[in-house]
Image (tube, rainbow over all chains, first blue to last red; front, side, top):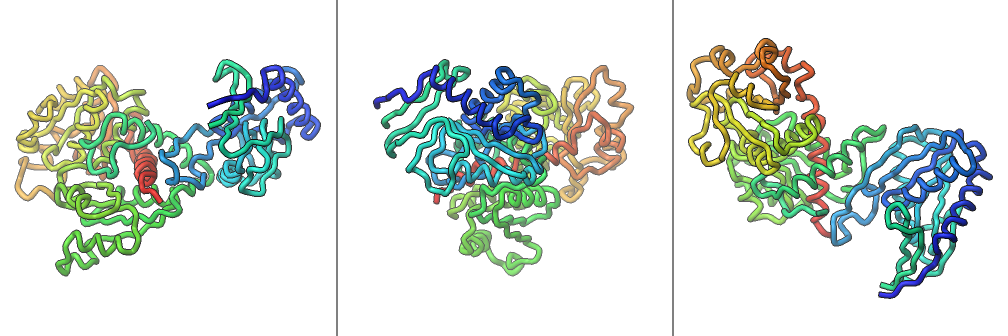
Length: 179
Length: 309
């Protein structure tokens, strides 16, 4: 198994600030916008973006939630192991809100499809956008594309993109791992 | 651990402690789901479940059916009262006929102990025991333990007394297994005639004085007096039973601590517990009912995930 660094900590930090600025450009004051990190690993990116928006760009009252999509996935009973659920934490109404789904890697698009179904259990949003740190192009199974992307990469199918976060993995980095 | 060690839920005695913890963790997520505006998830939309009730049931059947529907499974229901069982059909033939309609999972209540185990050896579907005679009622025991965990933070180290008709109760036996597996201390309390002869082998404390039992415990699980199973007289009168083994507010208030009151239902109000106890803040009876749906969703979800496509 070999691995190659796609992004180091400094590059991740630059990209996060750019993504935060792009969100401000589109949503301005965030009064009707909610950020939703997709479990399990999109939540680190969502938490980090919310922190940057609040601390570096003084955006007040960011509404941030975590959404688990386990029960909405279309590969239940297809894998070797039972799909393990994570915590959903949405302490606000999504009705008529502008939602930004946030995930670390966009690959086949099936997770986002599941998230689009899952969010319907909480109400009818006004609009849903997608933000991903890594966009694996040429690997989509569904017609889903991000509105905000950190870095677009070409990855073949026996390779995996692994995003590490300081608070969980002790470093900010993105690796391309050959399986 | 992300997978159950069993393919059927036949009884607590077949489970490991890790299985119980996995079911509880999964139930935590389903509790969140059933408090959403839309309480349904699509996980089991390609699964068909048959609820086979060879014995009457109201809340267990409703709870299972609701759990199945909230997981988006297709559900068919069967009650022996209106079926070919009355015409002499065997259990295996009845179930095989239903399974030939492409059923993936069977939830069965049966008056005979061991009916689920017997069936699991002869058919090719996942089975959940929803009560087999006076043997086991695993989902009830799971939801009882889950409710204790929710109220007191942990089951491990807690003292639980099961009061009443231990002899005829599948709830008691499954509860004893489940509580012991999780490290709780268990006592049974009831008239000597309603304590089974094998009780010594279960390594539980035995008490015939209710006040002493309540003074010992953190949780009292009050069982229903099962009039339908009382083919002979086990105690002189219901009035005398209530005087000796019924819990009322006065008795609870006279204890020097606050204990949690549970009841698997249906309650004979004024017999096992009085209305003011059943409706008091010490009672978690309605929490048990709500937790029942989440626990059954978890058990069905985890078993269904082992049925590979």
